[in-house]
Length: 474
Ligand code: UTP
Image (cartoon, rainbow, N blue to C red; front, side, top):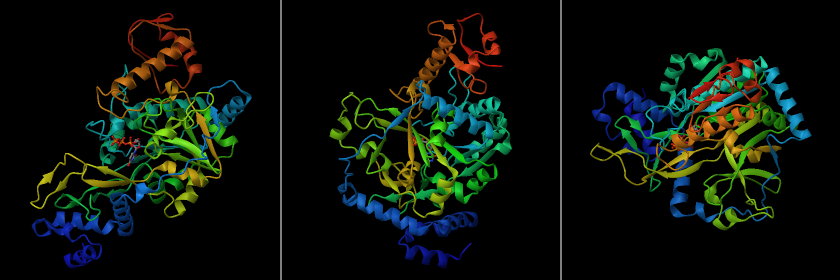
């Protein structure tokens, strides 16, 4: 541990002497904890955060709206259309899966504040019948891919200090949800401290701890590189990496047609989108302008632009981003080697803090800025970006909000999963009685081909399902 004088001088230099306010009353282990945190900070980065906070506070940042006058939605492949291009893409994607050259990154470091669940979001039970957790469903899909193509899909799981210990414990308890532990690379993303409203100070949330938060899903790039994840994938010959989020149990990151469009177009970055239907939907959209493709956040789109429609009635900016991306490994390696590939984003939030009397205050209104990086900000750096539109009923049911919320809640996700299962069972010739919950087992049912296999059929009593059931394939 550095001597107190060295810490004081460091903190004076960076304008944060108040962080040692409780030093004298701390035990030695607590002093060590605080000293360790303070000396591990990247103070240049914190200075950049404070600058951004100052710009936001003074209104300068908001004074530079994006000029999207010549922007358009880029051409999109539509997943599942009966075209020659789709057939070729599917064959190409299947070839990559059979060759074992595809790896996956699951980002699961978020704090899940809106959901308010006690534990990492990945451990939330969401299977409509099985009550399988998000992790079990999403990791189960990798088992199904491995069964079909005979090759494991190496998986990196990103946690944060908020989710790491509980995620490790969960994976141990569930035997890695059926995956080989050697197939999983667990890594923890970084954090960034919160900055007070006046852009001045960092906050303590305990006498021996500065208030920090995970550095956003974009933290994936730096953390994956720094913790050896990119090398881990390279050693397993993964030339393509797909990333997806822990809160979408319908996610199809390994869909062969999606992978095939990515590979056949020689894209550095490909992304799945769903049609944005109403201008008010709070979703980022993929736009292309002067040859550069990027995601524009809903807050950066004026109401007038957001409401503009094309001749066919679709919104001009309809390509809603759902955070399922494919990258070439080489592209991620190059981006990771470049400092500041990803800009900082700022948000005004409620951050608990210790007041001058040393009491923890839970603010009722936002009191500080938090900072994050977003992985989609890599898009403009890619020479070729390929966009694939999917049907949300097939691949997008995010869990964001608590029970009872009108959207993205456990109930709406439940309904989406059951409707998805009923639709596919109907296509395979089964009837499901009204009001009955059914679920497709993630580990054995990849697509409709699995539903036509005899074991799936024999798990049904004839062609009619009249009680809640998890359908498995042989
Ligand atoms: P969200 O931005 O929806 O955040 O994350 P969240 O933590 O799930 O929920 P709120 O906003 O606190 O209510 C989208 C995805 O990105 C991951 C999340 O785990 C989720 O899979 N994520 C988010 C990270 O991995 N790290 C982060 O720092 C933020």
